[in-house]
Length: 136
Image (cartoon, helix red, strand yellow):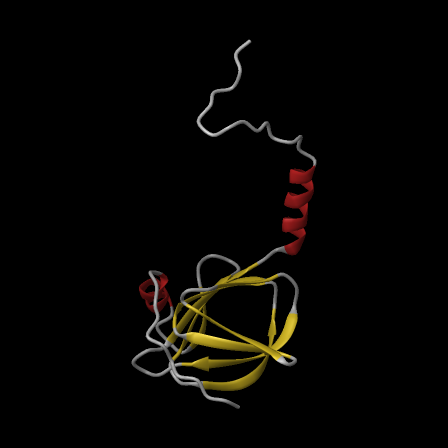
């Protein structure tokens, strides 16, 4: 494993996640399907099954490995996972700069229904920006 250092990167989500995740690990929120996470120590490369979700990092950096590929994501990134996928994950964190993140579960059946409903709509009328629709 190649170690990587925690970056001080943080965004506006970090203080809110810190309040919602006072302890280590996963903390459910009052909103079903939304969890927040605090990790204060580095986590070595660990097998993880990612469900369909959106991952938002408020502070810190994570690295995901899929076969021979790997990618890092941090407070400047948004990760969208559209189907369950097994990966290995490592986290750069330290007590004075914990990794703070949030996951929002994706309901794939609901997304499919929305996509089907949107595709059934007639095409929107297009006109140059700033012009008014024609009057009869």
